Image (cartoon, rainbow, N blue to C red; front, side, top):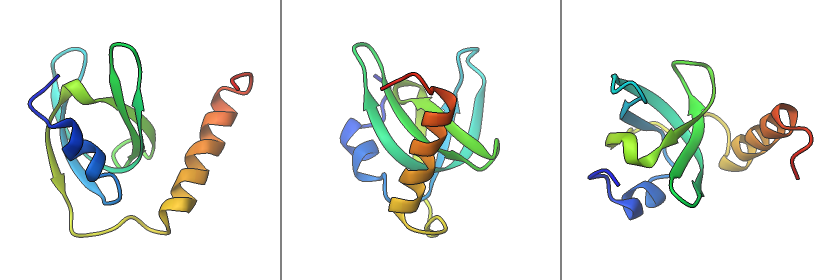
Length: 98
């Protein structure tokens, strides 16, 4: 796991974040995201959220997050509305998953 503390990621979910993230090609970028959920799998943890740069929901591997900065602004709407949008997105993308 990266130097980013797992509890720091979990506790920071309600607010808008600026992430410095390294992709699978080891290219770093900074993203503004609105976190929705933290997913746990056997070998990897994912921070799922709305990415301002891509204007779409994206998954970020926690072990590739180099830095998290909590921004002063909150995302538009409520967390419940964002979660519903993410669930609708997941259902449309993976209609056979349940």
